[in-house]
Image 1: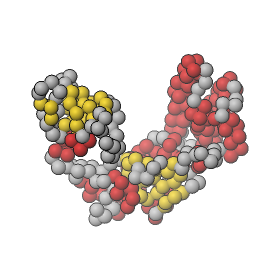
Image 2: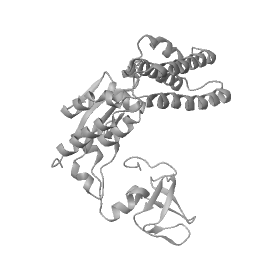
Image 3: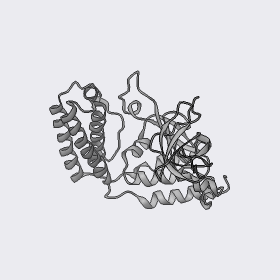
Image 4: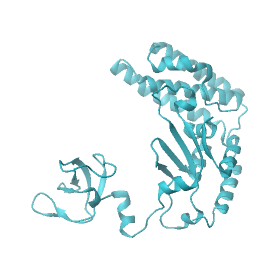
Length: 305
């Protein structure tokens, strides 16, 4: 029998919604907590309970541990898919297609921003801070969470604001785009360079162990450094890789020796250091302007539930 809905991975913490036999002659009570340990031939889940016993249950007889108590008291958060479908203010294609690194096999990854009704934040069940879906390769943030992460110079979110491939932009989305410069600051030096350094340590371990790293990941790390160099040197974020396309694709294909890629990375780190010394970017982002805009969005969203 096929399992309806998303399959729960092994290790997922769950709570039993109904009592059932525990496999040793006893009963696993409703509300017992455990972890998914496998799937039976008929599509039921094997659950290893915290006291060591085991039981099986259908998907509709299980709740995720994090949601069980809210479900039990009848507190239900707004539907994230509905928020994305009906309240998205901005969305853009990111990833390889936005970077100018796409091939025929590339996915179309879309990232968006939605605005939950202001009244939803007055409830015990707050709206989700992010939603994965409802379409494949589509991920969205609630506007407050988006602003918070973008102000911290998270590369993924800054690239959403600067993607050349805009899918949706409402009047509020246009206002958000007009604020792009307010999110930019010297914090980008740490977020971009620090992330690349930490990831390259893992890639170097892969290289020593397997003889080759994950070249696609290497390519995107180099791309991040190129983007950060322009951002610090010129005060603007450029998503498309431009003239570096062919060399980056050669990295992705594993056509460049590791030593050459490593030299390129180290040279870019040095360029970032020099760019930081003369950057026109402010030390910190314009939090006051972004916060003022967010407050105005909340006021204008009153009564939209």
